[in-house]
Length: 149
Ligand code: FES
Image 1 (spheres, helix red, strand yellow):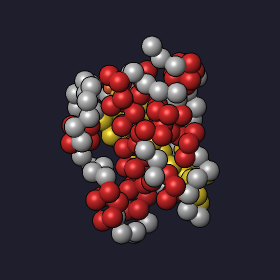
Image 2 (cartoon, protein in one colour):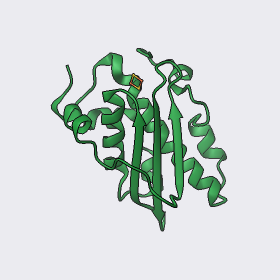
Image 3 (tube, helix red, strand yellow):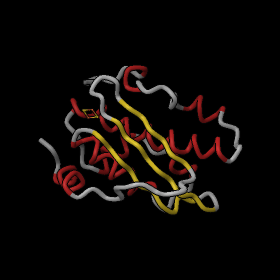
Image 4 (tube, helix red, strand yellow):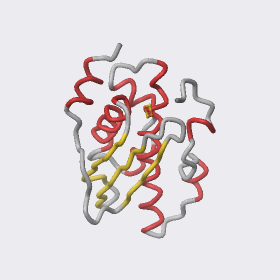
């Protein structure tokens, strides 16, 4: 039911932990299952030079956090903003439909961390807040994603 990549990222997740003095920290949660994901970013010259995560959640949430951190490490902030949950799922060779909402947490946690970075550095956050409702912790509900819970 899970791809080999999902199992691999769940059993050996990449970039687990915290970054002291992170430049951006984002936390999102799914109110239905109660899972929580936190992402820390270290950003230099607009490049994500380091990223770590902590996820209290299901296997799919851990695997998608791990893959999301791999996908944005070394990328520019703008590139990271384009990361979709679909891209994370594709990179993991798919997820069962009932677990797709878990991947939304990964996309949202990255966006929430970048929003935090924008705020700390005095950047205009309006466009980003519009782009994605990151301050709402029930993204999956707002976007009517199937399989929540
Ligand atoms: Fe809650 Fe996967 S994120 S069940």
